[in-house]
Length: 486
Image (cartoon, rainbow, N blue to C red; front, side, top):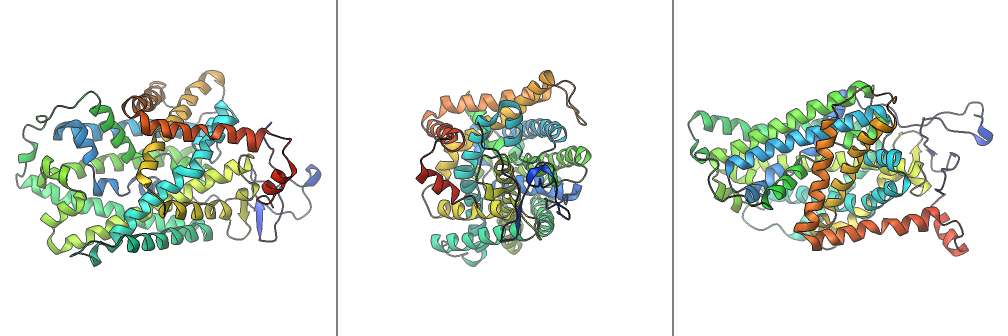
C-alpha cells in the first residue's frame, strides 16, 4: 500500500502542495470559495524546450575528451561512424520519449513512465538512486569541469589548486540552485543564452576545421579505417561513450506539465535538438582530425583546447570560458529538469511531502530544488566521483530501456490510448534492445563496478518496503519521518 498524497495545504513559508491536474483539493472534496490554484506555470515554449535539450546534452565531453570513442574503435573512420550511429540511436530514444510525453502528459520523465507501466516499486527504485547518488554526483562532476575551466585563463603557467576549483565550483552550484529557486522564466532565459554560447563554441571549432579541409588538410583522413582493429568488447564500449555524450535528450519530458502545447512542442523540440546536436558532434570531430592526429587526440586531456591553441592563437583563451559556460548550462538544465522529477515523486507519495510544495509567488518547486544542494556539496567534497558515476551509469540505461519498452507494452495493453505523436514500432524496439544490451555488456565486461552499482540500486527495494509499505512503524520512527513532513 503506497502512502497516498495528503490534502494540499498552505504553509507558513508561502508554499502550496501541487497536484496532478493543477487543482488543489479542499477538505471534504469541495473547493472553498476563493481558493486559488498554485501550480507550475506553462512557461516552456518551443525555443526554451530546444534550449533545455541542447543545453543539457552539450556539456564538457565534446570539448574535453572525445577520445573514449576513438580509443575503443581504433580508427578515425570508425569513430566518426560511431558518433553518427549514436546520434541516430539517441534520436530513436528521443522520438520514443516524444510519444510517451504526448500520451502521458505528466512531468517526471523515466519515473512517471515506469510508474504508469510497471508500478510503484521500480519507479521508487529509480527515484531513490537518482536522488541519493546519480543526480548529486552528476551535478558535482559537471560542476567541477565548470570550476576548472572558468579558472583556466588565470592559471596558464601553473596547475590550478584543487581547493580553488572546488570553491569556485561550490559557488557555481549555489548560483544554479538559487536561480532555479527564484524564477522559472529567468532560468529558462539564461538557458537559452547558454545554449547559444555552446553552439558558438562548437562553431569556433567547426568553422576553422572546415577552412582546414578547404586548404586540403586531409592527411589524417587518409586510410581512415586503418589502424588498430576494434575488439569485440571495444565497439560496444565505444557505443557506451557515444551514448553518454548524447545523454540529455530526455530532460524535456521531466517538465511536460510546464510545456506550452506539449502535443506539438515536445516532438518538434526533440527532433530539432537532436538534428542540431548530431550534426554538431560529427562536424566537431571531423574538425579535430583536420589538425590533430588520432595519436595526438588520444594523448590530449582537453581536445578543444589543444585544437584552439594550434589554430586560433591568442583567441584560444576564449575556449575555456566557452567550455565553462557550456558546463554551467548543463548544470542549470539538469537541476531544472530533475527537480521536477522529485516534485512528481513526492506528489505520488514516494518522497517527503515537502518536496511537492510550490512557492505561492514564484511558482517554482523550491524544496525540490534546494534538496539537491546539500547532497551535491557532500559529493563535491567527498571521494572519487567518477567511480560513483561508473558504478551507477548502467542504472540510467536500464531504466531508460525499461521506459521505452513500456511504450511497446502500452501499444498492446492500451491500444485505444490517445497518441497525438506515434512512432513506428521498430524505433522503440531497437532502442530498448540497445539499452538493455549495453547494461548486459557492462555486467560482463566490468562486473566489479557494475556489481557495486547493481547492489546500490537494489537498496531501493528494502527502502521502498521500509518507508512506503510498512504501516506499523515504531513511534520513534514515525516521529523521525513526520519531522520531514510539515
